[in-house]
Image 1: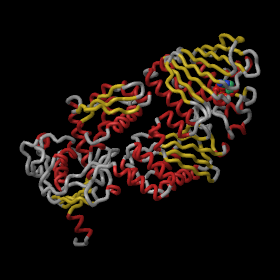
Image 2 (image 1 turned 45 degrees about the vertical axis):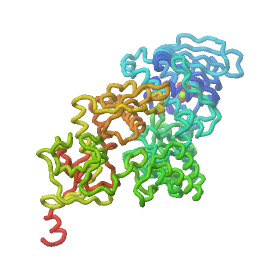
Image 3 (image 1 turned 60 degrees about the horizontal axis):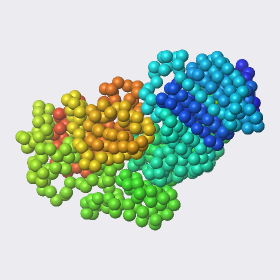
Image 4 (image 1 turned 90 degrees about the vertical axis):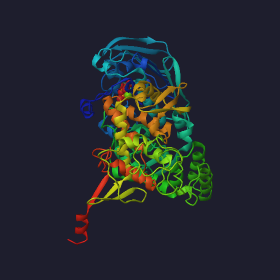
Amino acid sequence: MSRIKVLPDLLVNKIAAGEVIERPASVVKELVENSIDAGATHIGVTIEDGGKQLIRVTDDGLGMTAEDLRLAVTPHATSKISQEDDLFNIATLGFRGEALPSIGAVSHLRIVSRPKDCIEGAEIVVSAERIESASAAGCRPGTTIEVRDLFFNVPARRKFLKTNATEVGHINEQVARMALAHRDIGFELTNNGRSTHKLPGGVGIRERIGALYGADLADDLIAIERAERGLHIEGYVAPPARSRSTPAGQYFLLNGRFIRDKFVQHAVREAYRGLMEQSRHPVVFLFLTIDPSLVDVNVHPTKIEVRWQDSNMVHSQVLGALRDKFLRTDLTPALNAGPPAAEAGAFRRAVESADADEMRRAAADFFKTMPPRTADAPAVFTRPTREGGAAAPQAPTERTPGEVGPEVWQALYGRSEGTPSGSAVHPPFEATAGKGDFAAGIGAGYERPRRALQVHNSYLVVESDDGLMIIDQHALHERIMYDKLRREIVDGPLESQRLLLPETMSATAREMALAQEHADLLHQLGVEVEPFGADTLAIQSFPSILKNVDATSFLRDLLDRLAEKGTQTHAEEVIHDVLDMMSCKAAVKAGDPLTAEEIDALIAQKGLVEKSSNCPHGRPTTLRLTINDLEKQFKRK
Ligand code: ADP
Ligand code: MG
């Protein structure tokens, strides 16, 4: 890094001006990036009151002289680039020279710094853009930057800051992104006097992921590597069973910088196609390295987006790297099954070693842990009936036709209430009296099904008065569930069930904060969670309707949704969104075999849901084909 100089006007204009400082987390990002650019090996981040009161970043990097300090707080002063060509060949995180002056304009900023070869350090204090003082200071080599009272002079901005817990969540996320990219550097985060993260430097990717997100996930990741056409890709990708409901678990790091990129994201989605539901998002960590001249990072003020010289190449390389790995190894059985962590780890190791025999053995061991299914269908190749959980046993096949067991009610309505267990119950449309809430629901809209047939365990073909209907079983059931939940939530919290043993979930600070912040909403949904130590949530109660759904993965998805939606939308919208998700999870899936009784029960409910031709996601639930259409097709008319 060379000395600081003011950029020529022309170059200044080339750099689009933009808002860099939005919230405490943006300050942390800019300061830590500067420390990284200064060659630090250890970076300490201290915050108080969510960073609103104080943000302090300390490093052992290059340091600055008194003269440097004055320039550092001057707009468009940077030591990182000096001519236009440099803009297209950026190897540092910073280059725009706007972070420190921007921060100095909206806070009380104090910098103390000392280059290694100077015996004395220097200090500068800036408040609302004005240099308050500049003096000599005794300090260790390196730099400490303190930002106090962020936005004290911009009340509008300050008002928009969220609770301390939420702001800490954002800060954690920023630090995690930088820590993922720079494993050679040690990081320590201190929040209100308590050390919350201690990440030793000089570690590998898997180790760093483990330190940030838990060894459980890190151990499960599948390593991917490819270097072709000038792009080096190193990836650590999670099995589909770890998918999330938002892309929050996707980390793309390009040349040491966290980016969001639609090409890379799309390539990842493509690679996982068919391995998980389309609405899910895989958890992936991708580290891309490319010649800096082949990518423009100066398209966004916080540099989170980039412009590729050849985006098609990037897309096809990322897709190829993942797909090759997935194809070379038969992932499907274990991946769909949502394996428990230990077995999954063994399976992952076998997959990585790509040794067919070992893989078969690991898979066999793994499936021994699963509950038995029907005698002759090998469990390995049967889809689990509930996402994320172990395969639930199907309704026993030996039951006489027309008999409905409690598990049918369970599957369709999430509770076995109103069904005398074990006794024969006739198909709902014939036995409406006294059958609990199901019977109560049968009214004017009730359609008596004629003949129904399930095809490919996904669609129901039903005779209707004027022809036939083809029903998407998942879409219809989801719609029914959604309607039911929407009606129920109006009357108070959803029916919930207290768990005998609370289920624990390891949670990030952000997730802890979200659970706390949205406790009322969670209660409304029938979910009770309590903090259990600093980084664990204990699920005490859970909605009855989701009895077959894995509680931790549901809660994680729910918190993801709240993180994504909670801050910007109305409570009603959030509830709608969450009910949507709950009904999707509670509903039978495409691929679930249904008994004749389950099919009948489903169709009997069809008439009850208004506008039932669309599932909550807007896909149609039913296609109709009239006799007239058929006759036309067969040229009878
Ligand atoms: P940029 O990072 O875009 O150059 P900044 O406003 O963030 O702009 O920083 C201005 C300059 O201050 C940097 O170019 C660098 O020379 C110097 N600087 C900032 N932080 C540090 C630090 N922690 N250690 C050494 N130098 C720093
Ligand atoms: Mg900078």
